[in-house]
Length: 358
Ligand code: MRU
Image (tube, rainbow, N blue to C red; front, top):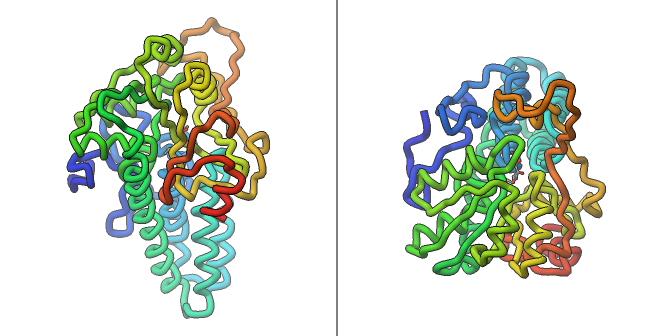
């Protein structure tokens, strides 16, 4: 079941995950839009699989799921001596961090949880007490993500004009975060304020996050969304239908190079050709100032079958080879601005990112 409570748009946008009475529930996004199924996460291994298999996906949602997932993993150790609890916490955090490599939010939230535990160690007498404090910290990470999405929406709103055509890629929506999404947050807010505009969603092969997820969630909320195949983006731009591109991101290097879903780089290059501004919506949890440039970002390589099949249907001959990098890196020179919770950042990004997130 989805949470019935309405968010800031006034619409019941789907919740990617919920923490209820000490239990983690994850909406299985691999089954959308056909079926709405939430799975209670019983073990940390199940959470690892939910992240790896993209049942929960999108950089911010992965970060929040990992924070709660760590609690699921630490539940059996609440009655153990504190020293043992700390040892296990480190081990379990490293394990969850191995589920996917590219989105920095995963490591960011796990580090925040383990750093928090260390900082509390002087004040807590027992593992049970520390566990409860960690629950509060995970809930704070979750609530902050909601607030950050809203702030990104408020800052990005100035970019959405009446009559505009907006192109987005993959799903950087409510399903990828805790509430309004990042790239979609300005769109939800603009719609709520009565601005009429059109959204074009790339279908995003191989796993179709644009078709299955972005189209679904925007349609549910009553926004004007039109699905296009990835290969149609150039033509649609050439017809003057796109005024702005807004995408999400999984990791932003210190110089402003941004990793996002495979195909994003192509959209950015097209946008430059057609002189369309290309924006990246980016919460602070996705900024990685430790990584100097985009070419140092680890790109997840996924199973070839995701390319050889479309859903359960094989589209390539038996024995065909396939590449499946899940992300690409857009050079900072192609990015008109980063829409963040602290405002829209402009070049030079090495300076503006460091000033706001250093
Ligand atoms: O493989 P996915 O579906 O996790 O990839 C998601 C994306 O690339 C999103 O655009 C990104 O995580 C930003 S989500 C606000």
